[in-house]
Image 1: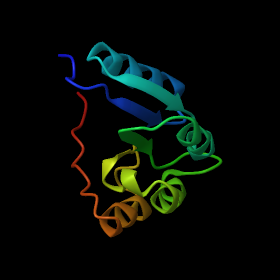
Image 2 (image 1 turned 90 degrees about the vertical axis):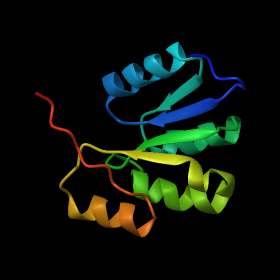
Image 3 (image 1 turned 120 degrees about the vertical axis):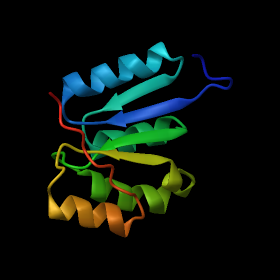
Length: 113
């Protein structure tokens, strides 16, 4: 399935295998995908490229997802409603509060069997 118009996606995650795998799947579907290992690297990439969608981990070293999002909404407001947060921290109260505060509905995790 190839998108009708070119879509550029930024995947931000400190787990290299996960970021590569997700990028591979999205590229297979015809998207242009860049990856960043944390929010600081992602901010540099936002200066170089215009992204249509950002997939962002919450818990990362250097600059985590919530602090990255604070900067993103100030400097790249057009992306405010184009961010999807990813996290393995499904039970973390801090993550859930952030998602609820920013109007992002957490998706109930499905256990892998």
